[in-house]
Every structure is written in structure tokens, then in C-alpha cells.
Image (cartoon, rainbow, N blue to C red; front, side, top):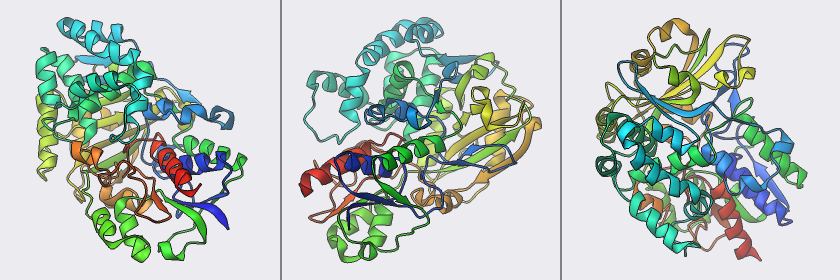
Length: 471
């Protein structure tokens, strides 16, 4: 008999298993897919020799995770690669604004908005570690740094639209802020959409936006290797079809979405809670394209060739319109597109002289349309001739993503809505949101605080909750 079972081997499931194994628990991880890793997996999607990330590609929360930073992942093969610049945001007419590791250097590229940017971001960067420890946990908690948390909250609870209107005057700074805020999957007029921009900007300056050498799979493989070194075990190809069919264990941690959990639970958790889990709202979906390229993307703005991530969407107003259309159930004619170009900095993932590209845009939940043309039109807008570099492409509609990883329910890559209320009540309003009633079951996926991202903190907190209950 195991002390604990963990269902799902994504970063949160592996983090939960490691936390328990560190405390001496006998832990077994059950993974439905043949390869472990959930959203942090890599493999061949286009042509031989090209290694693509199946979901996540750039990992500021991975390198910044308070839990991952305590683990000897480098010893197990994880190496972080830092692009020359974390982010570039091109505008029309060959212009671009870059987000550098240095706050000062970033501010220098913003003209008259530079002083405002510096005064905004430098205090956050100076307190970055303390801030990460505050918001990478349930929001219903007693802050360790109450004044810091309150000051950040006054900024973060605002909408990105209101925030940008107050702090920035020129197109460059406003566009950069819009792209950061759009990671929220929220309309930019929504409360707390500014929080995402502030956190991602702070991370870019304090820890960077790195990529794992060799692909995201190496994050999962390093976590798995450490778990095995602690005595834990992992079974791949083991699909769980009902919680009642699981082997006996004192605690069961589920790296599953609320919707999967509700479907598998049966009478193992209270019916009223099961209904709440099933009704947890989804976020928008994504349409993703992976590219094999014969040369680097031919950006008009030289700054884009120095960045690991490029945000495509033009001005603040254009990005705000695109995200507003997605929220209204419409497919934008000019979507906000996120592009990653890993092989500019990690050439090991493609044949010599060739490259990979990774791009996605937000679409209404469960959309079935092929967005290849509109995504590539946005790339061509800022990199004329891009299509001539493409050797092969692999497109992923929402249901394709779900087929590869059941946690990406209908193409929702964030485990559910990330608006202010559903960050607080995630998945229910409780200071202990991981425990599923008075049972031995615990939810440890991105459907719990602090939400989406490759950071393992959902699993870490869920495991600590289970340990407190079971000892």
C-alpha cells in the first residue's frame, strides 16, 4: 500500500509527489500518457530532428518558482538558457520596444515613459522574492509581508486599460504593457488584468524569461529523476477511469482539472462539491502552430531577433480589441499572437542552421476554425517573407491539445478562468482550496491556487495540506 497516489505527472503532480517523498512518504505517480510531463513535454511534431514543445515553451515561473529553486534540478540535467532579451514587441514601420533584464535599459527604450516605468518596476523587482512568496499561494492567507502585499494589491487589482492610461503616454510602453497583460486571457478592461503584466514584467527583470535547454521535457524529466532519487515511482500508460478504482492509499492527489475530477469522482467526493467542480468556468482556448524553419524569422525590427519571446498585436488598442472579441465569442481578424524562437539560443533542438518556431493565439473556447492564415498574417506583418522560411508546420486546434493532454480541456491551457474572483475562489472559496471535502482526495492542478504556469506551487501547497491532515 502506498502512503500517497498522485494522478497526473505534470509539473504540479511531480511537485506534489516530491514534497511528500521528501517527508518520507511512499509515493506513486500514475500517468495516462506514455510520456510524463503533462504540459511540459517536448517531441517531434514536424520533421525529424526538430524538437518542439507541446505546450509551454518559456518559463519565467519555472526558474522563479520558490519550490523548484529548492530542488537540485540542475544535477538531473535541467539547464536554463537566457535569451539576449526576454521579450520584444514590434510595432508598424519597423519600430519595436524590448523588455530587457535591466529595468534601466528597458526604461531607456521608452522615451518619455522611461521614468514612469522605472519608478513602477524597480521597487517590484527589489522585492521580487517576497512578492512571489505572497502571490504563489492561495490569496486567502495572512500575508508574511502585509504592507508589501497591500501596496502591490493596490496596483494589481486594477485593469490594464486603466493602468496604462494613468502611467504611460506613448505607444511603445502602452503596447508592451498590453502584451504582458494579455497573458491573463482577460479583456484588458477587466479588474486584475494589470496584475499579470506587473508580475510577468517583474519576473523578466528579476529572474528572466528563460527556456530549458533541449525543451520543456527536460523540466519534467529532472523533476521525475529527483522524485525517483527520493524513492518515489512513476507509472506511465496508466489511465485512471474512476477514483473508486484506484489502489488503496492514505491520500490521493489529483493533478487534474476540476472538470476531469468531477467526471471521475463518482461518490468519492460530496455531490454538492462535485457539482461546483463541474461548473468551474473555463478560460478561452488557444490555437497553436509549431514550425520547422530553414532560417531565423526575418523580423523587420532587429530587436526581435534578440528576444526569446515576441508579442505580436501592434498597439494597446489593437490588442485590447482582440482580447475583447475573444471574450465576446468572436475570432479576431488580427489576434494577439505569442511567438517563441528557442533555437536562436538553443541550437540543439534543430538540425544545423535550421530553426523551430512556436506560436499561438487566443480564441473562444472550443473553436474549430483553422487560424493558420490569420496567425501567419500577423507574423508576416512584422516579418515579411516569413512564409518562405517554413519547411513544415503542425497545427493544434483546441481538441488536438486536449487529445494530447486531457488537462487542456477544450484548449483551455490555464486550468480555468483567471479573472479576479476565480483567482480568489479557485476552485471554491476556502482557505484550504486543495482538499476535496472531508475525504482523502486533494486537487493539485492549475485549477487550484496560484493557477496556471509551470511552477509546481499548486502541487507543493496541496501536498503540504495533505501532510497536515494525515499526520
